[in-house]
Length: 388
Image (cartoon, rainbow, N blue to C red; front, side, top):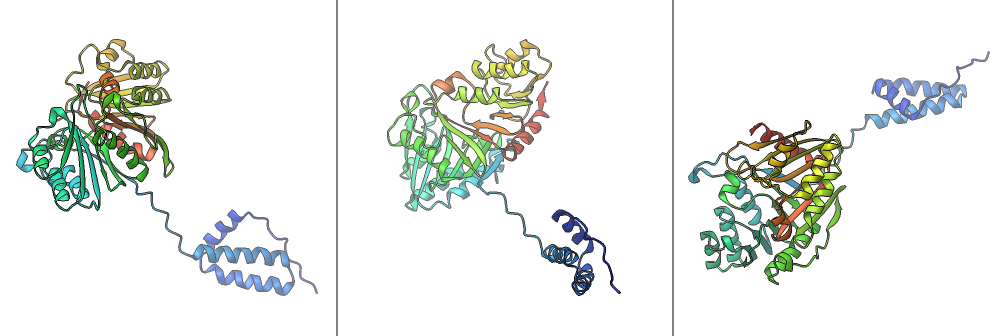
């Protein structure tokens, strides 16, 4: 007497995985029994399906591979300004940066518009005394600060920009690999009293850009319009993030910012110490006319002059544009645009004509929602402190 078996079921590989997941370890024995039975009966179709289910079950029982960690190539920091008395200023970003400096093995380059943070100055002096090369550039307006004089007394060569324009950069390069840059001056007030951002990158490509700028200023004494446009990696992709990185005034940064702003489809957020650039401002208002939501926070000092876009936007009276003045402690010193919560524009660059034409400045535009997320959080934090 022959025994018939039902036709083999049709199932996708995904379906087999779901079946295996439901069966669990206890289903292994049942599958093996059915597999042996089907082979004894000569039913190759059922045998093939059961064999695949057994293989899938065994694979499902194996521990899952842990996900690959996110690339550890940047750390984003914001100040938390409370402006405590000098003797209580401990544990801030100045100490974090100093600790990073002290890990240098061969060379540190620092371009600082303003520099008086004692932990950073002490770290630079310690490195010089260890025989590690320290190169420093500052602006003439701050070249006589006590910290700068102390650095010189300990053998550190500090080059000053003596033009009418400003050497307004705030960056550090460590061992051709680590880059610190953002809006934060390396000062006690910059760390403890003012709203600022600074980002630590581990990227030889970005470091090379800033070293090229440093060599122009330190080695060749070229500042402002005399600086050549020779950034090695102005556009690059790091770990999937598209990056634009350039320097003023050799590159017209207002145009780069305006183009990024003009690409907004849903939302523009900004935090600004100074914003008078017509090219950027009109690009923003053009997107507002198209229905893009705009929110921005201005540093209150100087925001009400006739050239500030705080005043200009107020006169436009657009329903989808809301700009406010900062009411927090100290200065709102950010220079940030966030486009559609996926692109961040930041650096030392104020959104002004002087920054574009006269000053030595740096700017980054990074297209990466994960990178943008902390900047959105910082925007919302400051927005809660504003005056409508």
